[in-house]
Length: 188
Image (cartoon, rainbow, N blue to C red; front, side, top):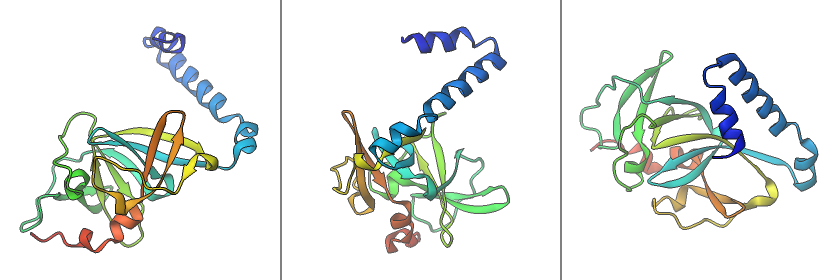
């Protein structure tokens, strides 16, 4: 456990002080434009876990992240990866098990399971992933256009990857995914 982890745990019974400390840390983390300027422009993505692998979705391709809505209205005659329809803030979204759509098995629903509401003008979709880890920031110099090998068979939807220290983060293009003809073929 690091010193910063223990200092946050010490504040767990003081919600206001905890929020103030988190805000201070957030400001410090983003208050260094010189570091970003020295290495290149910044790219921000939403980090998600799927089948044990880490992926990034461009911030502009993700409208919102939510828990899996309940209840879902089943769609008769739909493929199993179309879990149903959900009303989110008055708008209907098809809820798609992304792992199952990509052929990597069913996403087990747990307390960490989330949906990513895609930000696409023509194709509304809520994509189920194992977990969302928040925003991740990279410099453009950390980007590689090469498509990495992944456990989940999604190479045709990858738009390169970011390399930071020893980690590789494949970039999943929701635009490519939603505009692919196979995505529109939801009838069983």
